[in-house]
Image 1: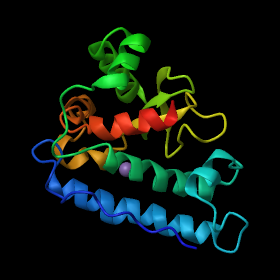
Image 2: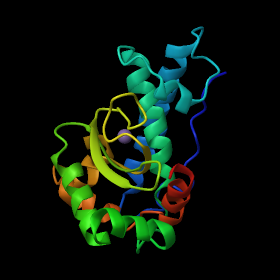
Image 3: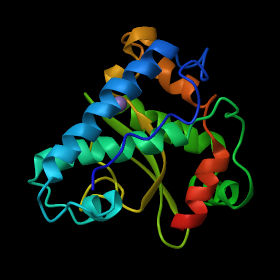
Image 4: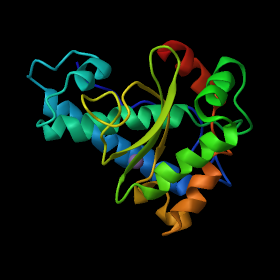
Length: 202
Ligand code: MN3
């Protein structure tokens, strides 16, 4: 049973002026589509075929680079589209806001730690906010398409917010200015979705 490229939950230009339509189109229709197709080719006829992506990645043989790269890419981008929204930005609320204050002191301090993880990831990768069982939050980054649910990668726990820092995510609009891309990301974060993932993962 093949994985299907998930639709973007909004139009390509919906995150303008923060994230540009051309980048969103190429990122979703080519990059994410490519990971999806390559994942399907890598699992076809193997015992991974038919499992959920979470099951595949959480018990992955990390030497299986085709599934590691493309399964990670499939999963990471699905999360990325969903944790952004044209109605995003602002501040987290409720139990997520309480957990952020408990783990980082303040929302600003959480953002600062996340921004640093995203800015200092050398080369391609992701920055993550993860929740551990019990509700403690953690920030880390991963290389390439590695994801925190893979064995022995990153901060562990369940990722509830992720930022793609591959150049394909920002180069058309921001060129080499990754920190500017990181700072506009906060204008589109869908805190309702992040809260939902926090409640499910804690
Ligand atoms: Mn990407």
